[in-house]
Image 1 (cartoon, helix red, strand yellow):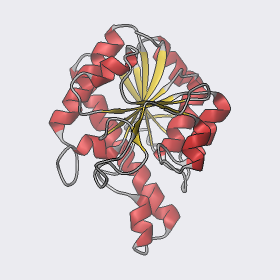
Image 2: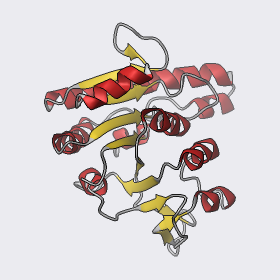
Image 3: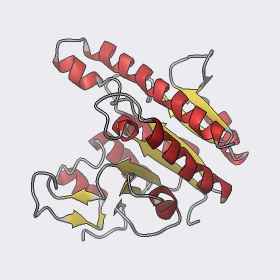
Amino acid sequence: MAYRRVLLKLSGEALMGDLGYGIDPIIVQNIAQEVAEVVASGVQVAIVVGGGNIFRGLQASAKGMERATADYVGMIATVMNAITLQDALEQKNVPTRVQTAIAMQEVAEPYIRRRAIRHLEKGRVVIFGAGSGNPFFTTDTAAALRAAEIDAEVIFKATKVDGVYDSDPKQNPDAKRYESLTYTHVLTEDLRVMDSTAIAMCRENDIPIIVFDLSGQGNIQRVIAGEKIGTIVGGSCEVR
């Protein structure tokens, strides 16, 4: 494998598959199987999972719910996804810990940086739930923050498209897919790889981001092995 310690960012929508809401058990089992094989190869894996398949705070806020309250509900949704993913991984005999930024001691550990790193060193997958624990910040920002804290070498952002495009490929058949991008280009062109706070944090800490298609069979293993799939965003990258 090309990396020693990585952070995998999964959106809540990725767990939903083709369903309109909730969690597709087949998708979760497939993710768990691929992560299990990566862990067996000796890579330390941390995961940040979103909650958009259950609740989206920003949308609820737009419909009249107080924003901070809506974001806290969204954080709780991410914990539901984290526990579901933990169960799938442990069925594959992968030791796993869920750590949350909001105390939920009956179902998860509180987030403690040193404990998280120790779990990783022991070969356990650590799933970070509840975002950063603060409203007004996305799980993308939480992923960038956790990656910096645990000294991850790279963030892998699993999506439903095969990379970053200059426009929406579903609406524009002539949309161009980038092989590589700089942080600055992503910010100035508002390409929405991750939110601007997350991109700025990755730039400050020199953490590359690789955006890839989760639906491709074996793509998690391929991208962690260093195969060039998707789009890489980094400080030394060229725009091409």
